[in-house]
Amino acid sequence: MHNQKFIEWVLRIAVAGEFIGHGVFALQGKQQWIGWIQEFTGVSGISQGIATQLLFFIGLLDLLVALIILVKPIRIVLLWAAFWGFWTALMRPLVGEPIWDFVERWANWGAPLALLFLRGWPKSLKEWFR
Image 1 (tube, helix red, strand yellow):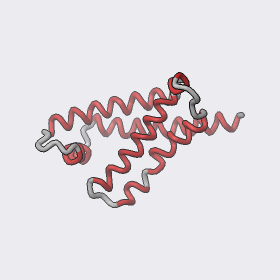
Image 2 (spheres, rainbow, N blue to C red):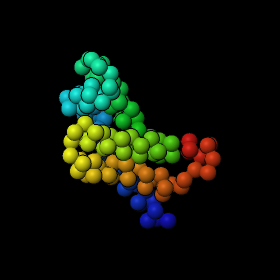
Image 3 (cartoon, helix red, strand yellow):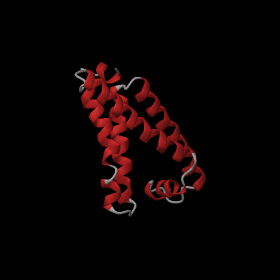
């Protein structure tokens, strides 16, 4: 049991670090990401200002995810972290970057998914929120 707790904490810190790092970049308005939002939304003419505001909101959400995972890793938040990690990794080749930018980010969705499985897949809707 001691090893499982140790592994859980390693994963919690790793996932939180990823979301803190990305959250800070988003709050800073990372220019490349603003361009991706403008390009990928499909909304012609989305302004840089709106894209920057959206990115700022995403940054706040990323920081909240990191905090929850450090304090109490709720399963639904872990599922979101795995989904968001996968989506943001996949976005790179979708906006024209090499497939290897996706491959190198597999841990961004693999670590939260591993933590979710380590904590146990929920058997009811109520368990998703524990």
